[in-house]
Length: 213
Image (cartoon, rainbow, N blue to C red; front, side, top):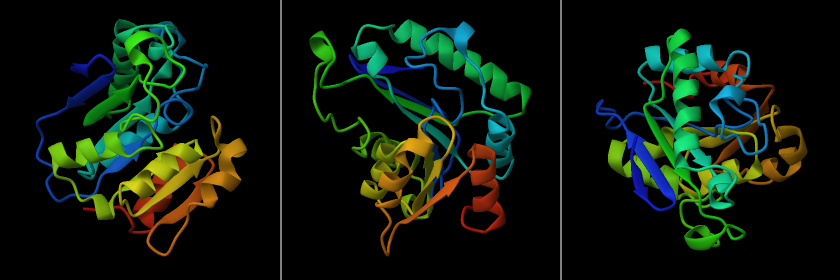
């Protein structure tokens, strides 16, 4: 794992995913239960079906990219060591299901953060598309065929700004509260849907032929 600068994290594997559509995922409320500033590995609780959904994409050769806002670091709730410990716990849980992340990007900058972390509207912080665009640049994936799954309207908005095919708001985490706002981002070029959880969202994309190699 790699700390790019004071508030940015980017870890990308060496596999060749050039020209393939990718699946971009938010973390808290989508892959793991949202504990409100998750910075302790002991508090990691996978959302049922998330591991198997990610493993399904892995088996099909679809790159899975985690993009997560981490204002808890910027606010001093925990540090990058805590973030890494959480990620290692999630990776271990994924491995048990036969899954993995092909890339992990995180942004700790926030308008209400402390010290050097206090940057408003940083280009990597969702709803800005910076994390997606960086992954697209480095992995050379097909952005126009890619999808994002999140539990906040900001996830869906970031996907639209990055030129993805569409976004799915899951109703786990914060999803039920953000449903109307997320759906407002639909356009002729960007599909927006809802799903009960990550497992159902992935099933719909794959079996509907909208996310495939």
